[in-house]
Length: 267
Image (cartoon, rainbow, N blue to C red; front, top):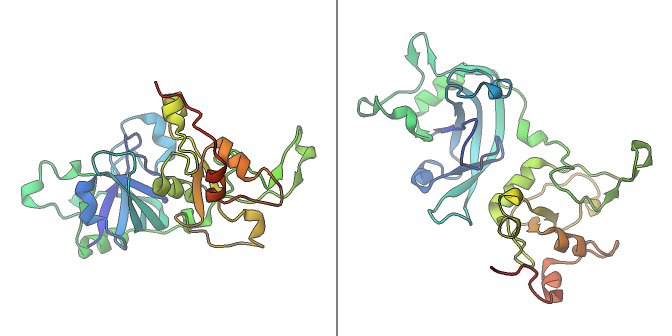
């Protein structure tokens, strides 16, 4: 059955619209791979987020499909990450209530607490009713955007000084693939085990490099990238060593074989 997934303006969950949905295990049965979902936001609580929303009122704002689901490697509660496929944002907000009636059918036993759920399984009839009010924009996530800042070391190109001193080729990197790779592989280095948050604390939480196992410069053009098999998380040091020699990119196994010790002293 389809589902509605709630995305809040601020949250403890590491959601990335159109790329990854982070959720507790109690919703696992409702978010199996292939489930069609509609994105929902509740009433605005902080007006600083107004420009990032389609409406200040409760509304639906996009549709997608659940891709593969992975365990959150940092959770001791069984939390999960779902990869999001085919995300399409609506041209305008769809109100949760039209002409005085909710678009979702609320069970009589859930009248007082229905809207508290972060994921709501809905009927096909309700799903179709919501989408009947939608005007669709082209897919946001699949288009992708260059992501230089989010992937700090772009070894296939270089920049020095002013804008006019750029040389080499800059390869586009999609932010959604980076987010999905982190959800799958975690935030520790897959070569040496280094964890930025454990080493530096809250300031470094969520930081890691994402490495293309086959360098983008070897693609020979656009290529479909699977975040599970084509990407891996590495710390800055290991990522640099992998690309140390211009015409020889090391494999992660080769890199592990070179390691001589641990560089973080445990307290």
